[in-house]
View 1 (spheres, one colour):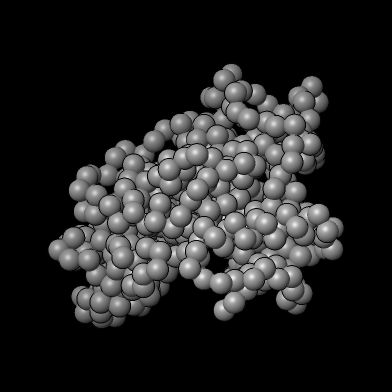
View 2: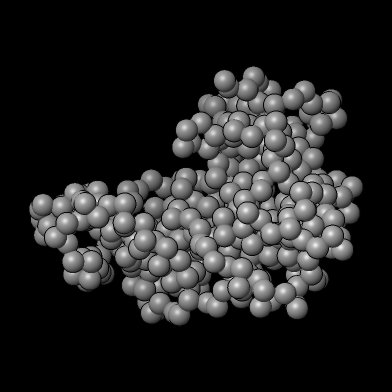
Amino acid sequence: MATKAPTSAPVLDTRALNRATLARQLLLERAPLTAEAAVAHLAGLQAQSVKAPYYALAARLDGFTPDDLAAPMADRRLARLVTLRSTIHTHTTDDCLTLRPLVQAARERELDRFRAGLAGVDPDQLTAFVRELVEDEPRTVGRLREELTGRWPDADPQALILAARARLPLVQVTPRGLWGRSAQVTLTTAEHWFGRPAEPAPAPDAVVRRYLAAFGPASVKDMQTWAGLTRLRDAFERLRPDLVTFRGPDGTELFDLPDAPRPDPATPAPPRFLPEYDNLLLSHADRTRFLPPRHKGRTWRGNVAYRVLLVDGFVAGLWRLTDDALVVEAFDALTAARRAEVVAEGERMLAAMHPDAAYDVRFGTVRG
């Protein structure tokens, strides 16, 4: 249960939290940052979908083009690997080599679900075997599976792959992840890819500060949701003298950096087209600051997330690209002025991301 704040703490209502989080997420106004600097500030970009980080930055950065992200990935200044919440993220070199150690124990605990399929497999031997293979030459998942099952024929092939992913920081090497390129997932270790050894995990206190800078104001439970970790309250308590505290709409205690932006709740929030699995949508335990309760469950089907439209800072619909159109599916009726703003933002996004294609912006019906 979330800790309640003292009644003396100032209250931040939903709109105040919305505007503060949008400002930290570079979604209230576009930032004049490089892609590398933005990825560092955001502590990584959710990247299960290859294209998602590109659309995420197009919504956040002034003048962004896909090459602004593809170039530092090709130059090994950014990379894709499994970190927070056991999902693929695009991270800077430094974060690949530090945030992964931070969550390493959590990744290894996931193997408890697959112990039956790993009977007879010594985890340390598997780790050494995989490291030698992928550092000798990056391996596709299929090839790595074949070599692992050749070494441990009685083990479950999928469990072996999951164990390799949990035990080692395996980077998806380029051209995988580059805009306009297609390639199988091919893996090597982060240390080999960057030519640097892994570094000690950062102190939780430092990561709390980074989280608040990108996602605050937030509760302990919010950060634990973002990181996929538990037992972070001690870090917040150590930092309490250096932080400010608030009450959320339900009384939950929220922490923040004293000098972090907390804009006026009346600050205009332009429409934004966010990709599936965007950071904004997955990094708080309480998501009502941007997801109205009446729309809960409408941005997912099963394990598949939809691309989301923000209007006035809140989830207001879905969007998709067809062969010739950007189709906007609003949950509620939009005023003529709002529709015009959405069209203008859609055209801007299309010009940045698909300058050589001819797309119309159309309004459609939300899928059932």
